[in-house]
Image: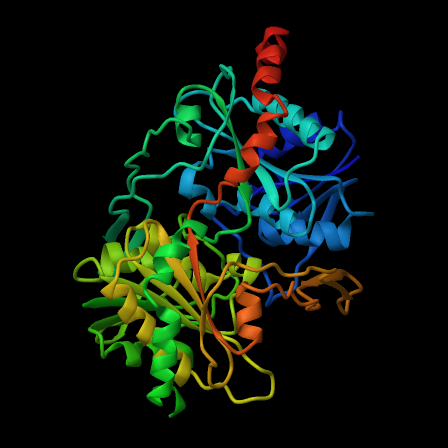
Length: 260
Length: 260
């Protein structure tokens, strides 16, 4: 087994080291991770500047790019062959609900799935003031990595795994939950009297609905959410068809507005 | 009507100017856009450094952040009130299939939807060697913006609009298509003999399946894809439940492996 490990907290983060060490029980682990923190990088790709990969020690590469870059470069450039699995994490902090679309950790798993490689994203919820212990999350990651290798993931689908702090009470298959949003911009003045802004001020919480990832972790369970790459809202087609856009557009063209 | 306009090609791009000018027929347009190109920024958010917004002329703000930052800062900081609509684009190049998950243009519409504001992402397919004319795409954007304001978008859903080059033959409601991927890393040597890498070498094309966004644009039609924020693969639950993860995890805990 050949396993590519990455993250968005950077190659020096304790989470990725706990993960890589634990996964070595399953096969050869090659770490290709950002050389610094790249949180909230989303599914971003470096196209307009070249990337460097520094081999720190055997099978440990630091890349001056995003987690998505690392997966891309790992699979197509650095690894001796196509990996059997990509595991991203362990993220310092959960990636739940809509929030996970900002996450570089989740984006890396997304990228691997685009390239046809099975993948997991693993994140650990942090309780402020309590020491962070990645060992249980690493256990969970290794257990689920083994299951993914033993079974086969559904097409174009990866697992987004969130581990609660402490000893998990169990595991639940969940759906993506919804965050509640509020005004999240803080305005400040610099010493020269010019305005600047910070994003992400408050945390208004989430819709605590049964069956969601938020709910599972809040109740002390490991949350496993199958995510896919298709964002199409199929259930909306009927309603959108009722708008009559196709006909309207044809009428608009006949009036010559499109032929200026 | 108050409309927030953004993009990922930067505030000086011709696409955003064509769009903003055309949308002024519908109401007051405030442009909040990156001060430089931010293509392939994905759904990334600037959390660890402050943002600056420079007012260039009335209702035109240049922000030193990503498209996602611009929407966030626009809605919560710069606009006089919550906008009725966010329109992102017109992107120089299409955002089709899985590719659109990298797109800053699409991410901006995604962000607006998270904040509960109806939104559209508009992109123009470019044919190399042929002059780029944003006027038809601006017509299409204004037409669909009007429709979105007249009807109501389904919950948590935005429209990803792609316009073919030239005069569109019509409009189709489509689903997200799939790109074909190939080895996309180019390895080079710098003058000092050190390796570096470029991502995104080749373009192997897409699965040309009827009903997809790729197919509609390839056949000369405007593609309108309803996208939502929920990445859960609901159809995979039955299969994943058959793995028996919940039971397995409980058994694993009983063995004490989680209690080290």
